[in-house]
Length: 137
Image (cartoon, rainbow, N blue to C red; front, top):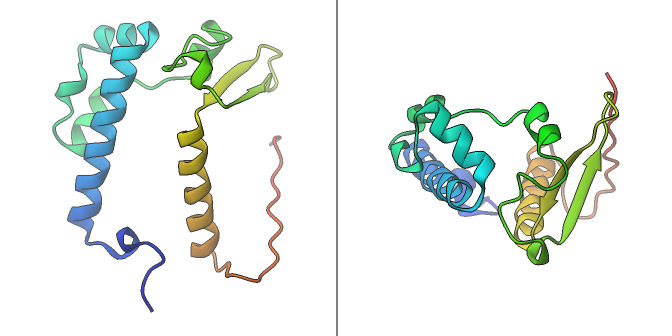
């Protein structure tokens, strides 16, 4: 049976090449469009073009919940607000919110990812699936 998407049965080298290409695009976009990411990259001594292999990703800084809280509400958005289609906010357990924004393309990508995850877990057309998770420990 053929995979629902050809990339799901691609050789590892092809998957890694696609991951590298997409990560390079993401890092360039973040660096070019957000002063917070630019500062974090500069402080770590890296620039987007320094990602030449997947291993190079270890040189790039993480974005933490503390970073998101310090830049509340929209300091880590990398697109103009008119391109933000959905906002998710949560105070978590600290009471200080974190905010994440999604474009229409982000939502489309996320939908595909969730569909592939359900399929990988055994979900098939016609099945009824209840997906539930808690926000607590």
